[in-house]
Length: 128
Image 1 (cartoon, rainbow, N blue to C red):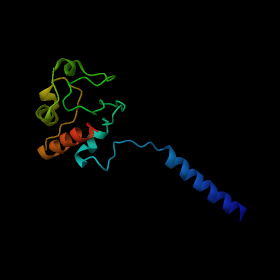
Image 2: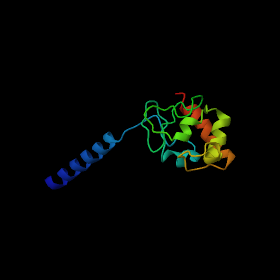
Image 3: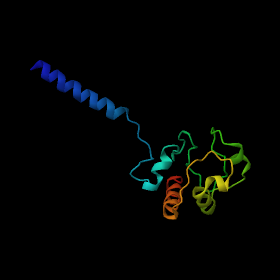
């Protein structure tokens, strides 16, 4: 019986430790559109969030390109002089290499509806 109680207590402690140690952020996969799932592999959208393989996209709409602090942008992106508005983001997401030849962004989003969902999410999440 003592062994069973020790096992149960240990199991509860282990579950509690895992639950407590999992960080929570404002960036929830439940609130992001399915179209953003591929983006999430490289990007965060959290105020003060970390850069990943790609820059943190919090507040990107309305910002100059290559302006996220601490991210190592390509020379092409630094020289692009772009400002991220809905049209520029739409063009870039549709064909990154066409919009900014030499960018490191490897993934295009050819579906216009998915691009619109991503841009709407960036606008909403990046202004919280």
